[in-house]
Structures are given as C-alpha cells and as structure tokens.
Length: 239
Picture 1 (cartoon, one colour):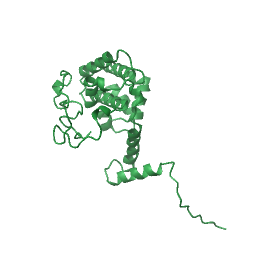
Picture 2: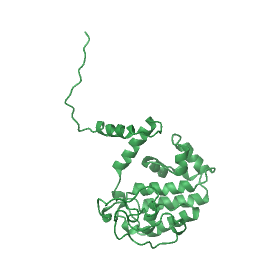
Picture 3: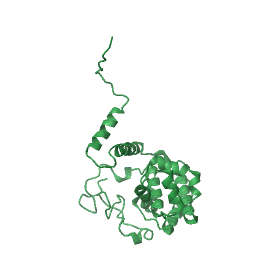
Picture 4: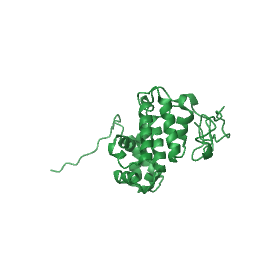
C-alpha cells in the first residue's frame, strides 16, 4: 500500500489512526479516514499498487495479532507462560515474551484443550473471548452476533492490559471492511515463505546475512515440481 513500515505514527491505510496515542486507542472510536495516499504525506512513501478497497485482510494474520497481544500482557512468572515455554521448547524465550508465533503454532494453541488449565480467571476470560471471536467472526461461519463478540473481546483485552496494535485496530474500527466469509481467504504463500525463512534462520544460527535471501530463492526454485531438467548426470560404471 506504499505506507511506511516499522513503528510509524500513521500506519493504517484506511484512516489516520495515531499508533502512538496509546491513551486514546480504546477510547476514541472515530478516526478521520484517509482521503488519499499521496507519497510524502502522513507516512506514505510510495504510490499504492492497488486500491485500498481491494485489500483483503487474512484471518490468520489477525489471529497472530490477537494471540500476540495476549501473550505480551501475561505475567512471565505464572503457569500459563511456563506452559507455553514447555510447549515450544525450540522457540526462544524472547519470541515467547513478544508473542511471536507462526501459523502452525497458533493452530496448535487453539486446538490444545490443556492450555486452559494453567490460565487464571482473567487470562481465561480473555482467552475464551479470543476463541469465540476467531471462531464466529474470523472463521468460515459468521455469527449474527459477531459485532458483540468482537467488542467484548476488545473490552477484555483492554481490562487485561493488552496493547492496541494495528491488527486489533482493524477489528475495533474497520469491522465493516472485512468480507462476509473471512475463512475463505488465506495467506498460504506468505505463511509458507515465513516457514521457509525460519528454516534458513536456524541454518544461519539466527545471524542475519545477505546470503539468506539467495538461499531462500534457490529453495523455491528447487521446490518447483514442474521444472524439467534437460541435462542428465553422467554415471560412472565400475566393472
């Protein structure tokens, strides 16, 4: 969309939501809409390639954002955080503290019925509301009470002390922007790229290098099942 990345003041491409006005995030419900995406104004760097009306927000990314804010607000000394640390032993503690998970890990958490056992009363309330919102709004079947479910979920996030992120802002202010069936759309290619990069990061021992992108490109080329190779390898026969 041409909007400047990282922690910018106006990071929403639909309205002039101030990401740094943390005191107003859960209070102010009326943010002025963006009239245009002009490069050089309101954190816009480049001209957008497509119209904002054609943008689809994948449900998986929103689930990642919902769980991220919940885990960030958790007490690291309580049993719930310890359970996540034991559930994903190969994930660094820094990533768990920041709530950084990938798609398969998020699906595993939602399917894990034992995750509710170490949660205290407040954590369980937020988690139950997250499950209700993700199932009845971000899933394939939308409940007719989806607006109340989303509003209750955000109210519990506010009470628990969760920070308002851009993904939660979409649920709070841009609810009518979502399609009628959120489960119909996915970001399979983006999620697969993220998983491939995580494998390469482990190979480079989490050290950034320019060669990582080249290795990722070679991995994608070699993984193409429709490629036909004309050159045959020569085999040496030993009598």
